[in-house]
Length: 415
Ligand code: EPZ
Image: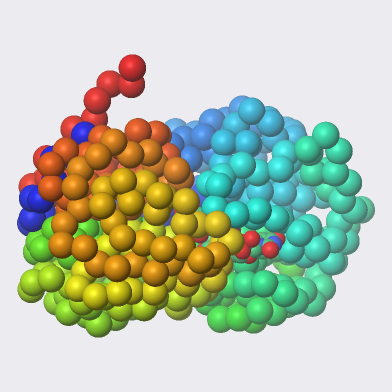
């Protein structure tokens, strides 16, 4: 339950990046000895992955709120439990990790947010290029290879998941793998840094050509997960939407360039420091146009919160969602709060209104849930958000952090 129209003020510390953690946890399967992971976000999807690893035979010692020692050398199976795998999208990383270690993997088709079809054809094409034979039966992807041989792989579509999955399988393949048209998100760089710390030989992560020279074996390492740019971006937008003034700490400002640039274009004051950003609203934001693109373009995961800011800005903003084909469902919920929006396929035309009014709304996916929170914070009156379990999958201690910023938020017990 959120009581709106309170300016957000004060400081918030950002947690580790969900989409890095969801790649690096399965990647520990490739490690030849124990790993220490720091700055892990305490989010539901991370817990699901840890449970899957433990179920498979990994030993996990939790030594602090955001730090674990994980020893996956004891994993004795190449099969993933269908139960948990369908709860999230990132279970697809077990394909690359198990194939890389055991030369075989049986992983159910992934679940994840309903924001489009979300095929994994590029993942499978990449793994086949490395020599895997892939069969699909009863919703389970069965992959196996006599041996994995490095190969050139061109990704027709820029894909975060496919880029990382191929990197995982290629680490100990024989010879050189070159991924062309690779995704450049910070998560890719973070995962490549983790793998290189294990002893892999990956060059070019963060550019659109990644070269992986297969090595014999991998060891262990200590790695700190990068801060979550999407969590940070959500707080930036919430500060602007509530005409607040907040300091966002423990971030890498360059990862947020496109969001900072857009907010400045809207007349919001964004000041960059070494590892923090100050976001201060100096009056009503002005509407702008947004087109989501692969990194370093404007991120699709920020499209939903940003559209809420546009809904209460001066003028008309046009939002083009070029990554996922149906990531506008939440706008129907926003209209219940008085937003004036017209959706035509992948384009939403958002006419700013003076104020949103609180209502009972649903989170339709993770970032839609975050958008509803921003809307509730900005709206007049009370907003009740249901399905907040979606939000818990990607935002650590959300209500605690918001309350520290002066928001009136409370979590009602599930009935
Ligand atoms: C990752 O999803 C993130 N999830 C998403 O974040 C994020 O929105 C997305 O990357 C884009 O940045 C995780 O990292 C767990 P893609 P992913 O493969 O890997 C098409 C969040 O809220 N495609 O980069 O599934 C696909 O349909 C989530 O944190 C294929 O056609 O995204 C989409 O149109 C939501 N074939 C485009 O590529 C494939 O084999 C980009 O998808 C794979 C993808």
